[in-house]
Length: 111
Length: 120
Image (cartoon, rainbow over all chains, first blue to last red; front, top):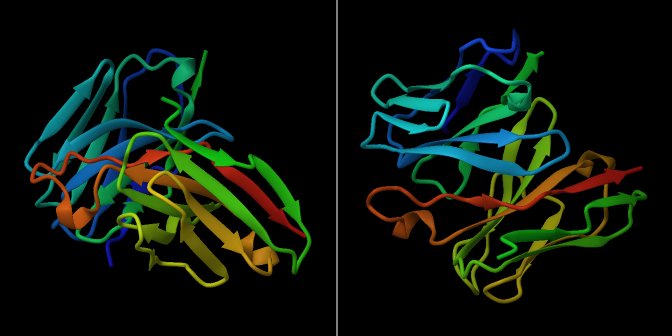
């Protein structure tokens, strides 16, 4: 069974810092890996999707990398802002029907 | 497009009561999913429907039933609610199921806003 782990579980940084969120998965036979954002009491918003053949994806201040062979992905957030405060979820799509989610990293960016 | 919609947003039940959570999508997606999210557990798949007319169990199906009413709608029913079913329930949809996923693996699941259910 695919296991997805996210480190750290929680992170607090001052505004303007660059930060890295980590995700690891146990089975490298994946179709893609996604990073989602979840605001308190809200649903999930897809931020970036990296196909298994890709190494990274970028969207604005976000950059996600994928090293499939080692079972790792990172989400890099540049010049963090208070509006970035949320929970970030990593999810892996393998041959099963479900997305396999990590437990998330709760990010707080302080002014 | 409204995307994926869920009703109700909040619900409080007593143990033993029944209810149906409704989900609809307007993106003409073939596949639909029900997840539950619990603190410290992440999201877990309850049931899914790879295409209209088919449903299958996910990781945690006990205590639930589903109906794929048509291509747009996928409902989740709790026949006799238990406190262990207190959770946040998310519905999701995707254009096609994993088996028929595009070679590039670019298909993503779109999530609804969730239903927050408390069973007393």
